[in-house]
Amino acid sequence: MAVLLLGILIWWGAHFFKRLMPEQRARLGEKGKGLVALALVAAIVLMVLGYRSMEFIYVWAPPSFMVHINNTLVLIALFLMSPAPKKGALLNGMRHPMLTGFALWAIAHLLVNGDLASIILFGGLLAYVPVQIMLINRAEPTWAPGPKGSYAKDGMFFVASIILMGVIGYIHGLVGPSPFGG
Image (spheres, rainbow, N blue to C red):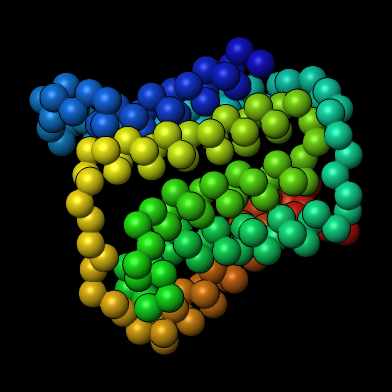
């Protein structure tokens, strides 16, 4: 559990570094981007290793229909994390589409995983989102959406999200349980 928690803490720290310590981050210049990226890779590796090494501790049994809700939420999350909010029309006025998509992804995974390791992992990642939104809004109180794109771009990015979900689902099934059942 310590490895999993360390990974989550490094994830939080790497993402919050710019907001909580802006002078120190600015002093690092371009080198800072690489250091943050390295910290995020380390966080992901630690989270995966910690998650996979934890003993399965049953907390609750998700009903089977949650798989369909999970898949729908993940598809919406992928669309929110696509370029659609900046280049499309549907999500043009949304300030934090990527963080919202990340939150939906975490919620989706909490719905279908009833073990302690999953609750710690996905709950810890979900809890990061509102804190990050608060820090961004405090650091950048004024915000205006960019120019509105087209519904055709929304459609294009939605189709791309479906294809990406199929690819991710296939890979997910190779390294763990298939998100599509069966």
